[in-house]
Structure formats: structure tokens, C-alpha cells
Length: 59
Length: 431
Image 1: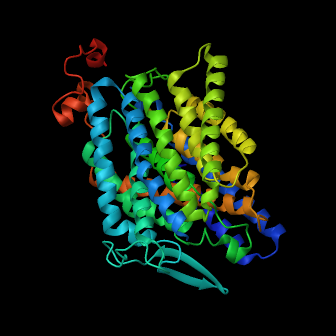
Image 2: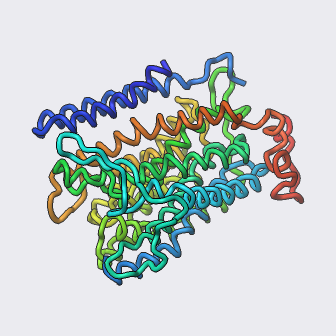
Image 3: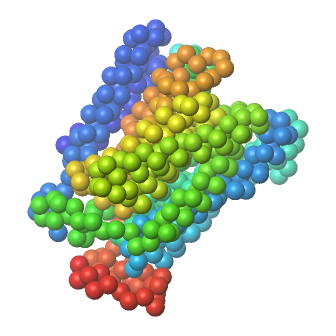
């Protein structure tokens, strides 16, 4: 889960960059920017959940 | 840039380091008594390391608007991605006021102060368990790679700053006072550090229930918050003039906005804690205050005071709720609250510029420019800073030994405590 989250973070960012570079009309560009941001949030959620300490590791 | 703008920037930069003094005091006060000297020493060392590393290579990577940079072209659009100044300040003109020459030394001075401030932020999060040597090594990575790279994109004429010119997105990514380049970069590094270090011993029970480990000196924390405000006035005004092209006539607006944002955030933090816990919480009130300062920095010169009150109100509520969420639900042990104060409030402040910014011309698409900046921080800066610190942790373990946590960082790493005449509480040794 940690690796998936870690990889989704830059993937979402690259989606945003691709939207910027490849799309000139504001509607599709905005939609892809939001989609890229949503991918980042998904990655962040996975990354955060992956860092919850397993019960056996707690003091 | 006019002579008046240059002179005002210099005056403002002279008081800007007070923001760092405030943050250092807050970090020390929010930690345990047995780690207070260590916290202040770490702050001083982090500032020193940041200044030296920024001098060696940070300024070269950051550069300044109109300065030399590496870029590539894609479909006719120029992507300016990193500064190309010589290392060690070699080509900076010694006279900062030469006619027709950008005040490169002034930009470098601001960058040095900002790099030091950024380096102070993670110290609060890693308090009570982060080795002094590791703090210095991590600061090398922060002030040599992460900070200057993003600062170039936002402040040095990089691709984020050019979003307006290249893609018609408002004025491009706006971060006048450093909400992004200083605070979110520092706050996300703090999050990475907490994940790598883990929580303090005894913070969570085996069932995951968090135990309260209160800061040792509320007066230090509150005084730090107040003194940080003075530094913030200088930081916001200088940043707005140097990086957002604000006229000197906007300085009163910047000062009013800085005060209003912090005030609204502190009051709402007091109200939220009163409603939730029965009494206002001193540390959360000051965290709300600083969260308001952070959120207001990005748009301090471009937001109407009424909108700044809204920015502050939301920031205060966000900081308070975020501290609780991180501590109770996500098991992120952040003694200084730096992640909530700097990362969460900073991200909100950046988006708020897109919602409330009053830009004279071409504000169409400003929200998207701000969203791309936020996406860059979450999608690029967070993995970068986490990856760099993870690699550092492999080469040089960042967390102290369990004995050191029991004994206290002051005695273990410095050989002397901050309060040698005080009686040490028994539970400090029993944990």
C-alpha cells in the first residue's frame, strides 16, 4: 500500500502536467487537472494509511 | 524595481529573522523540559547549516526572476525548471543597487532567511527523538535540494511562476510571503520526518490510544507566537515586493492582512477548543495564530481584508481539527503541530488566493494556477522529501536510541540540561 501510494502521488502530478502541456481548451484541461489532483489525494490517503503503526509495533 | 521598493525590502528583511526566533521558541516550549536545550541548539544549527548550504548551492538552484536558468521547450512552450547561477554566490554583483541590474544579492539574502525558516519547521515535529546530527544532515537536503528547487519554480521565474504567461492562468502561481516555498515545503518535510522517526515512546498505547504529553513551557510557546508575528510582517512585505511585484503602497495592506489573518485564526482556534474541550487550549490557540499567519502569507498583498478574515477563520478551524485528526486517528505524533500549522494551513492559504485574490488584470484561471502549485507540493515535493530523508535514514539513522529518549536529549546529546536546578519529574525516567 505504501508503494502504491508513493507512486500515485507523482502520477497525479504528472497527469496535471500532461493536462497543462497537451490540452489547450479550458474545459478538458480543468477536468484533467482535477483528475490529476484526485489521483494525488488517493495516493496521499493510501500513503497515510500505510504509515499507521501495526499493533505489534506499538509500545 | 524602484529604489523605494529596494529600500523597503531591506528594512523588512532586517526584521524577518524574528519569525525564526518565534518558531524556535515555540518548538522548545512544546517539547519536554529535558529536551529544551537540544531543541534550541538544533534550531541554531539548522539555521547555520541552511545558510551555508544555501550559500554553496541553494542560491544557484533557486536563482531569481530574470536570472540564468536551465529550461527545455515542449510544443513551443518554455519550461524553466532550475536555476543556473554559479555556486558560492560567484556571479552576484556586489553592489545590490546597480542601475538596470536585478538586486540579486537581495534575492539571495531573502532566500537564505527563508531556507533557515524552512529548516526550523520540521524540528518541532521531530522533537524529543530526532538526533542533532541527523537534523543537520536533513537540513542539508532541505536547503540544498528541496527548498531551492521549489523556490525557483515559485519565486525564481520557474515554470509555476510562468503559468500565467505560458498558459493564460491568471498571474501564474502566486506565493507572495512564502506559504508554499517556506511553510508547505517545511510542513511536508515535517510529515516525512515524523513518518520516518515514528512516534515518541509512550505516546500511543498498544490499543492505539494517544497519551497526552504536554509541552513544558506555555509562556515560551505564546511568546514565540507573538514574536513570530513581528518577523512575519517583514517576511510578507519583503516577499510581496520581491517576488510578486507589489508596490510599496501596498505595505499597509500587507500589514493589516497579516494581523487580521492571524487574529481571526487565533480566535476561532480558541472558540473551537472551548466548544470541544470546555476551555481554550493555549497551545492550540497559538498554533491557530501561526496557522493564520501561514495561510495569509500567500495572498497578503492581493486579498481584501474582509476576505483575509475568512482565510484566517478557516485556517484556525483547520489547524485545530487537523491537530486532533493527526494525533487521534492517524497516529502522527507531531509535538509542535508543525504539519497542521505549516502544511495544512499553507495549502489552504494557497487555494484561498485563487478564490479571493483581487488581481488587477488577468485573474482568469488564477485558481487553476494555485491548484497546480498545490498539486506540485503534494505530488512532487512530498515524495521527494520523504525519499531523500528515507535514504538519509538508511545511511544515518535519524532516531535516537531508546535510552536517550528516557534520559532526555539534553543530557544524552549535549551533556547538560536546559534547567539544571529544576527537579526532574519521576515519570520522565519511568517511561
